[in-house]
Length: 251
Length: 290
Image (cartoon, rainbow over all chains, first blue to last red; front, side, top):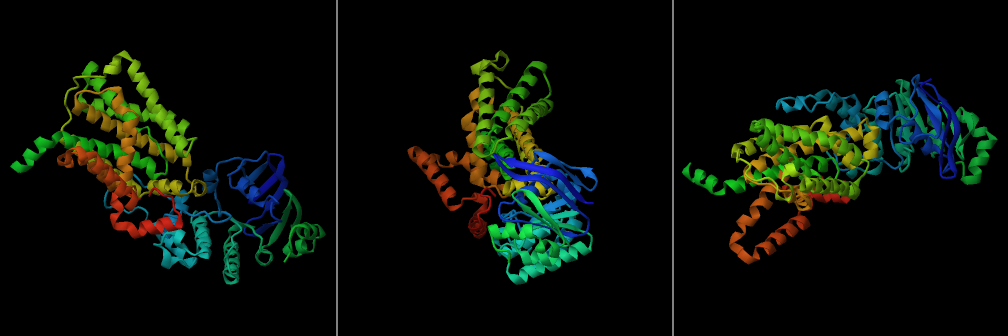
């Protein structure tokens, strides 16, 4: 198992945002995490990526206990993520954003750069460019990240996350603000990445995308896991239907 | 050649001051580039000045060694201070670092060996113009090269979005501390150089107004690259001299020039050729310092 959480809990004031969630994610699959607004999905992701500490429970990643480690340590171990509502380095160029994403895999080159003729990061720039190429952003490499159209910003954020060569990629609502064509492109990309051995944890509202892209799906409601299984199983689950119909429409 | 020699001898004090101020502006540039508003560099300058002057006076230490130890003292002190103050951000960080400067001033005022309020007088004029010039060139070159490295990009990423930067594997605290310590070393080096130009130092030389002055040099010059702080320091240091013929109107013109730069070149003098980029950055609401 690549990622395993046991009894993961976190409260804010009196609200139990995540309440004893057990989740097991096998390698090389797309795992969907869905649930109504306020179900605790983003809190769960923030704990797994190190941005929040859990009140109780453990996170195991690649056979090691990583509970409570800092985000930069987890990034080095191979957990990369995107953020709900895009968090790019707006004032840096598109290429620079991807290079920052590669920080964890680059040798520090400040000292080597003191020699005026050195260009120690050529290989990394090459990798960054090929990632941009793959995301269809190669032509915008020199633009400021904040100037990109919203769909492009989303794809740039994924390129930045992939630049660290992660083992687990967490996508927090990547399809928000994407048109149907972009969203289906994203589905193809996720399948492709999983085929090449990457594990993806997908947080998403777009039910069609989740059902089309995921191998397994877990459903959170009020911080608890109420169902888990294949997309088809989850869709038939009465508890899931109730949770969704109480809050919002399924389709 | 004679003309140059005449100019140098007539204005040597001013030229030395420009160089020292350029070093100070570069020292604060580092933390500003990483998006951190720290105002402790005047105090670090003071540490460099006092430590190097005292080592020379009481231990007869050679000048370069005294300078180096003065810088080292500030660098070592910057570590625990940085670990403490970088729990804070924005104006709170600025106030905490200013408070450090105030504490240092009070300590200097009360300590016999630093001459209390009298300060230190009769510091030998060991600094040559070329010392300052070489220091500026070396510091500017190193910072310029570092800016394009993994370290410089990490600083920029922290400035743009700290949370996202952490997710890229950047150890935020370590990079902020690195910027702070590097700034302290440079500021203290500049302090040691300036003490051996000015003959005397006292605690008020390194107080609040100096801290703000250093910040203004860097911001007016511009933060996108190392030319900004140097240009800002040169202009603002030389301006009173250039405007001398205006006599009583000098302060008015100086204030007007400052206002003009801040209104029309909000990213600093060096961005005069990049006004389009400035507008693009403002449009997308990027972090406003660089």
